[in-house]
Length: 324
Ligand code: SAM
Image (tube, rainbow, N blue to C red; front, side, top):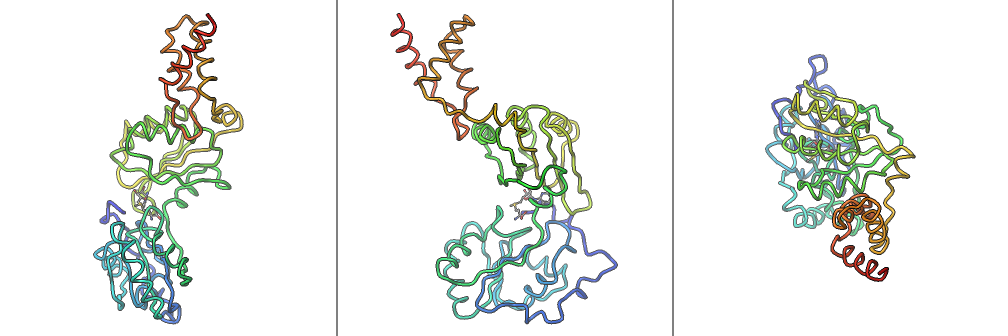
């Protein structure tokens, strides 16, 4: 969902969008098919000729927000001739079957979200799944999506990457997710919101360290597009000094071989964690509870969560008593 509609760029003066319409637009619309279509993420001129033809000629447009659909159609100079229905996160499961009944009768149904590719943190997946189950054709008119735009502009490796959507809102869950990604060697792409960026940068620093390369990409394809590249600490400081505005994507470089080997969760069991804690407590002269806390933090479980300290404490007592 775009936050700054007003920032959308109009079509550049040199190329009236209507002239890019496909002369055989109607012929491009497959009947009896669901079509997912990407819409611009900021720059109206990124709309494809195929999107324009589809908006004009499909039987039904299922739009995340119908007002935004008409606004886009206006900017593109397209008249939407088909029926328009609201198709969003809250109703997509219920609406999918009814829409597919119409497709089964020969209708063409276009699915669009507010911006970018449907299904990518946007509605669309429910109808794709139902269509697959029912053996109904589903196709895609690809186009803008912030994931690939940010990845390509980040300057980080693009040969292997993973998309992690939005980070969890709560600190503890966010840290669990990030810990589970410490050893990830592919480039990692996150979506982020303005009101969480400062907290997320603190957590990225804690999880990946100051030097891990990253890019903060904001307002992609819009007038104020900006890419900040550098180590996590540098980008974090830039967020403090000059808080970014608009829509954001974060791209984080993957772990190098050495970091990956060090950080790969070794899934130590309770007894092993207890033995390590006891050893550390004895060699450092620390309170056992402090040693357990440190050992647990240093050895996250494979899903990034931390072992239960009470269980380890109980195992330490057994070990210690056994040793007495
Ligand atoms: N379906 C969309 C896509 O394919 O990119 C993503 C929709 S998701 C609800 C919205 C998020 O995508 C924003 O919060 C932001 O993280 C990212 N995003 C979308 N447009 C963007 C833009 N122009 N610049 C930077 N990030 C953008």
